[in-house]
Image 1: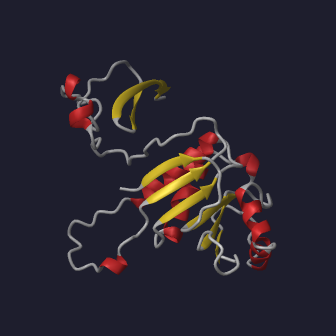
Image 2: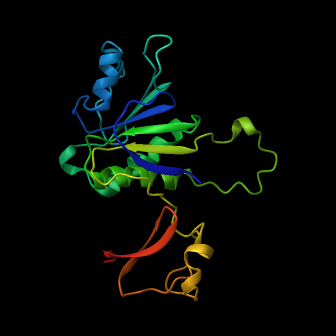
Length: 220
């Protein structure tokens, strides 16, 4: 299962760097820092590929950093479309589109320091959803053909940092036996855990080492 965490903005020392970019927005934040370290090579590469940040557009650039300098092995720019039309659903779709482009790396960092926190979270959630694969019966699949990506770090400037886990809906909480053992009763209204529903309209959340309801998230 893909592990998604929120971290403070910092250039990665390896793996892939994902750049969610709105249409004609230019480079900023971590992307600008990387471009400065590479002597403007990132901006020139995106211009040569005619990457404009349109919805559904993507561009992969191999690291332009000098040899021996730590940094990402590849840069993946993903278009978000027009900034004024960006929504959580569009950010989630962009995250899903970015996942196959970095699947061969061990880790990936999303430069979301220029995005609103809710859009950054939606982008990471889209990557987590796209990472799901049912491979129980793929017994002849070689190890080199399997996805190598294990974790995604969302670099955001939000004050709400930490390591909240993102889980694909419809699967049981990995620690439901220990975290919910004190209130382990059947809950047909929500199939992902055995904890009874505390109130009407509450949404389920899984965080770190405990399961808890978040009454602030209401289902419409």
